[in-house]
Image: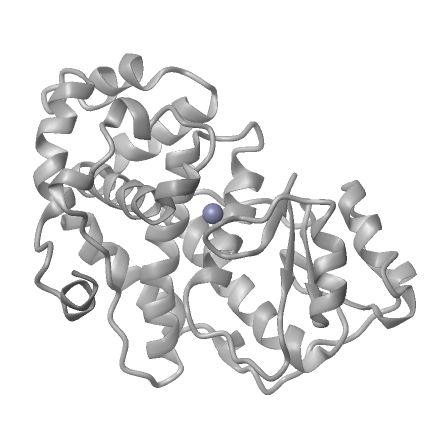
Length: 299
Ligand SMILES: [Zn+2]
């Protein structure tokens, strides 16, 4: 848990010192032709072709936004830049100024969003669409976003910038949940709310074997929630065991090296193989199961 407490503190520092948490200063709209970068993603073109007259555009340091109302886009831009800083700090990576920005498309009308969904694959957890480094989301202006699902998608965007060649599904989803849950809590605290990160434990009999969890290429549709929760716990466990080993693991897996090969090398003396990891991880994954109010009401 050592890294966890460090992580919590560092996120809090980022939050507290982040003057951009001021959501009242609206995004500055710019003409499409004046945007500093184009999106080569064909889905972007499809999005902007749906009622093309409605789209406005803006950009911040690391993202470009396409939206209908700036009061919907502004809080998203604040949250996006907040997450960028948290992730870059935790991954100990930073991009040079002027590097490629990620595009975020914000739909408002449910009908238009449904029309667009025909082109992309919805993420089962958040209902957003992340494709080749661009993010497509629907925001209803009357609904204020209050969980970690936007943060979750932004983590995918930023991870994709650092590890373009794709990383395994469990690591991508687990890291997105891990960072966005903790970041969401500190983001809320920076805005004056009382909030603590919450990681869900899993009943021992429900756990996926690691040989399954770490090899599937998309979340199994019948057990989506367990897949996300267990992936998050596994990332949390590996990161808490040794942060530098975890960062090296992320690098190796993003270069498509097999977990069973890199694990004993990077966690030498701790996990001799995936079975040894599984033995220790099972307890961690189920720790405190059934003790929280939410789980008690689900039982
Ligand atoms: Zn995801």
